Length: 391
Image (cartoon, rainbow, N blue to C red):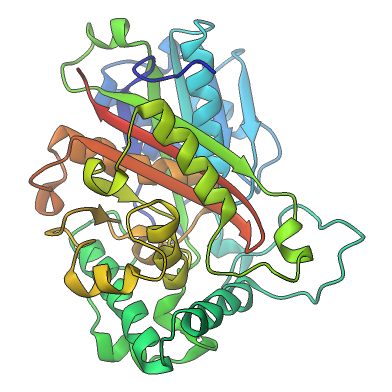
C-alpha cells in the first residue's frame, strides 16, 4: 500500500470557542472556525474546490454550504460515531493526495448542549442480534476501569489516584487555553472525591457535553510553499473499525482497544515511526473518560502493558514530560462536540508544530499525533493521524 507521507499539507486552521454556546447556532460556529482558517491560510471561500463536513446531527452538507456560501461545489457529509471528524479529514487528505483537488476544506460542528442531555446519545443502531442492556457511555467505560484495576492489581485508591492525575493534568492544560470549555484547575482530592457517575468513574473522570466547531484547509505541498513557510505535512493516517466482536466474546479483556492498536500501526508504518514513545513529541487523544486515556497510552505503544501507571506518576505525559498528551486540555477541558473533536485535536498539533501554542508551547514539537475513538469497548471506530513540520 502506498504511503500518504508528505503528500498533503495544512495551510490554515480555525477553532471556535467551545462551551455552552446558547447564543449561536451550528452555522455561527462554522463561520467562526472556517473564517479563522481562511484568514490563517490567506484565502477566501471562493478558493475552496471541495469540502468534507463532519457532523452526527446534521444530515447533509448543506449547512456548511449555507454558512460559508460554498455554492455548487462538492460537499461530503461524513459520520463515523465519535471518530467522525478524523474520518472526514482522512477523506479530504486522500482526495488531495490523489490530485483530484488542489485546495479543500474540512470542517466539523456539533451543538450538543441543545439536546438537554448530559452525556452523548444517539448514533447508529445496534445489530438486532445483539443481546445487551442499554447503558450510557459512563457505564460502558466503567467496565474497562474496573477490569484494568483488577488485571493489573490496582486497589481502588491506587486506580482512582492514577485517573485523578490524568484529570488534573488535562484541566491544568485547559486552564491555559482560552478556547476550552472548562478552564479551571482541579486537585487530585477533588477528582477522587467527586460525585460518582458509574463506579469507579467520578464526575471529573468523564468529559462533558459541549458545542464547538473546527476547520482545516488542505492542499498539496508544492502549492503550500507558495502560501506560507510554516505549513505542516501529513506523515501517516490510519482508520480501523471493529465489528462488535469484542462485545460478543467472553474473553474480551476490556484493557485494550484493538481498533486503537491497529489504526496506530497503520499510521506509524506510513510515517516510518519505529519507536513511538521516543519519536512522537505530542499527542491529542480521545479522553472521553480518564480510563480511556490511560488505556490509549498502552495501545499506542507509549507505555508497556500495565505500566502506564508508572508513566503517569513520573509526569511523562505532562507538558514538561517526554510525550505531552492533550496539551490543549483534551476532551476533559473542551467537551466533545462529536463532529468537531478530531479536527480540534489537529488544531492543537498544528499550533504546536508552528510554535504558536502560547503558554502551552512545548520545547520540542516536531511530530504530533491525533487519536479519535468512537463507539464502545469491543466495537470502536478509531482514526489516527500523524503530522510533522515541513522537510
